[in-house]
Structures are given as C-alpha cells and as structure tokens.
Amino acid sequence: MLQDHKKQYHIDVGEGDIGKYCILPGDPARCEKIAAYFDNPHFVGQNREYNIWNGTLLGETVTACSTGIGGPSTTIAVEELFAAGAKVLIRVGTCGGIRLSVESGDVVIANGAVRQDGTSHEYAPPEFPAVPDARVMIALMQAADRLGYSSHTGVVQSKDSFYGQHSPARMPTSAALLEKWEAWKRLGVLASEMEASTLFTVGATLDIATGAVFHVIWNQERASAGLDQKEDHDTDKAIRVAVEALKILIENKTFA
Image 1 (tube, rainbow, N blue to C red):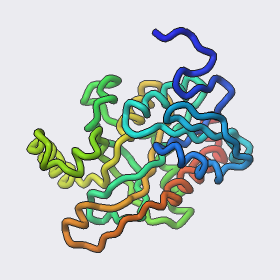
Image 2 (cartoon, rainbow, N blue to C red):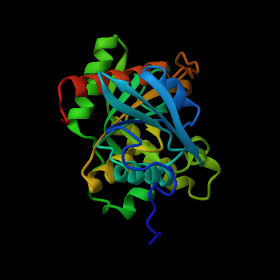
Image 3 (cartoon, rainbow, N blue to C red):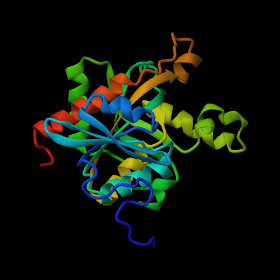
C-alpha cells in the first residue's frame, strides 16, 4: 500500500479540488478544448498524462481530466478521481468504425464494450458485462439528438493493442486476432477503441456512473469494401455531446 497522501498519487488532486461530474479524454491537450465549453474554466494542474481543468455548468462544478491511452492509465484516473469525490465519469474519445454504416465524423455512444483488454479482468471475471450507467447513456443519446448529430448507439470493442487491430496479420497471434475481429463484425459491433471496457468495469466496481461517447476517425471496413472513406480528426461533436449530456444530468438532478 502507498502511504497516505492528502492528494492522489498520480493525478495530484484531493477532495474539493474537482467536481462530481467529470469528462475523460485520453489526450491531455484535449482538456483545454473541453473546458472551453465550461463556464469559468480554469487550469487545475498536470502530472504525467493527467491534465485537469475545472469549470461550471448550470452552477455545478465540472472537471475535465485526461487519462492517457489504454486501460491501465484510465483505471488510475478513475480510481483517484473517485477517491477525490467524482461520481459521474463520461469518456470522450476517438474510435475506428467497424460496422459499415458507421462513417467518419459520426458519433458513437457505447451501450456496452467487448472486454478485449487486460485491466478490466483484474476487477471482474470475464463473464461480467462491461456496460455504462443507463442514465448516463440515455443523456448522451438525448444530447446527440438535441445537437442534431449523426449518432449510433451500440457495442464497441475495447482492445489493448492499437497495432494488433491495424496490423493483425503480422502478429504471431494473427489467427486469433482475425478470428475475433470477424466475430465482432458478425455481431454488429460498431467501432473499436481502447478504454470503455475498463471504464465501465471499474465504474461498476466502485459503484459510480459511467458513460462513453466517441468520434469516428475512419472505418477500415468501409475502406476494405471500397466505400467512400475519409479521415476526420475533429473531435468537437463528441465533446459537445458529453458537455450537453452533463447539462441534462445536472438539470434533471439525476445524481443529486
């Protein structure tokens, strides 16, 4: 066990330093962009990959905290934000489409995640489903509708290896990777990303509300099928959906 600290070991904040409602991007540079949609935004601090900004929405303190890439660093952020007082965590990230109807520039809202990661398995056995809090998921869906964005709600795949997905044929485990990828396609999985399964599983362990919304950068299956394809790196839509969802939750006093 670590010695007791007044501030959390990695994210370097303590009780009262953050809001109950948090938005979690992976990229530290994205926090300031998120905070621009808050009222009274201000920088709290940064340590390692954890960049933290605060502000308010409808008078409630809200926080943006980056997690870095993947499950291990995400879990550290979730555990320490919870210890500092966070109750609602919404992941905002990027993804690659799998289902052919998911196009670059679209928004994906996760109603579950394939646990093809390692971290979540240190919290729950493989039979346990990785799912978001239904109230948060519905708020994200309502937010996307309010903003008039093209969105999809469904299961996403969470993996640990970016290049295991993008270059599976050169991996020693290529047969297993390609077999699973084909299964996700046949099961209608919408997109691939790297954090949702961990967030949902750790959230269930800590009994906190979680959700996830993603910006689609591109869809390798559409490219393979010869369909129109372009890359889109503007994450603004997903960010605005997360911010609007927090407003809905705060306005409705869902977690008062």
